[in-house]
Structure formats: structure tokens, C-alpha cells
Image (cartoon, rainbow, N blue to C red):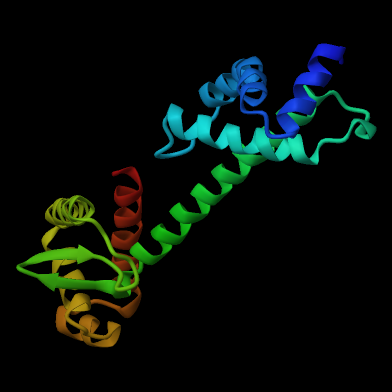
Length: 191
């Protein structure tokens, strides 16, 4: 590291706003590179720049020349860790949302359209419309027998009652419901 860079880091560490801005400007290519190579859902450029500012601030206050690492390398490592942390958090939210949404037991009938929702999740109206349409289209593509088995299941019939009502084995009714659940999960993940 050169003396000018050391001085800039020292001033930025002492809460000099101009030094901080100048230092951030120097690391903008790194910030931009990460932004263009990794995706965090619902993050735009301004969100990412704000996160990068926070990481730079933390890096300045945690950095010690005794680490034996240049400040730029240290900042890059922290920024990448922070980015991966954001991605992990985003993926965890998606998994938790999908797990709650995709429970077959949370299906109910409303105006002849099957809705796949969980009481624990507050879905926005657009999400509800997408889910309703996806399920409605999926049910319309089922053959008549599969539709009847599925509707009976939604109405609370047990597998034994379904098999007796439609003259099929419990195994066949189970397989039909598994097939429908798999299709539903695939369609909802793709929408």
C-alpha cells in the first residue's frame, strides 16, 4: 500500500466523509463487478451500493495493517461474504415460503377455484391471482377421474373413502394425489 492510500484510509476511518467517498469511488469497480456477477432478488443498483457502503464502513473500522493483507483485498473479501450472506438469506426465505405454500393440506375450495395458501403467510393480491390461476389451469388439465379423486380429497374424504367411492385401490388414489402434488409444486415454482 502506498502512503496516499494509507492516509485516505486513516482519514476515512476517522469519519472524514470526503475521504470515505473518495475511497468508495476507488472500489466502485469491485462493487460493480459483484453486482453484475451475482443476483439477489429484488436488489437494484442503489440497494447494492448502499450495502457496499455499509461493508466499507465496517471494513474501515475492523481493518488492521497487522492482518498482512492489503485493504482492497480485505474489503473485497468482506463484500463477497456479505453478498453471499444476502443470497443465503434470500434463498432461505424462498424455501420457507415454498414449504408453507406447497402443503397439500392447506388447499381449500373457494368459488370452484382451488387456492393454495398458508394462514401463516400474507400473500399479496398478485401472488394470490397467480397461484389461483396456476392451480385452476392445472386442475383443468387433469383427466376426469383424477379431478374427482382430488376434489374428494379436498372435501375431506379419507383415502379409504375415496377408494370405495370411485372403485379404485387406496394405492391408486395415493398415487393420483402424489402426482397432482408434484405437478402443483413444479407449476408454482415455475410461476
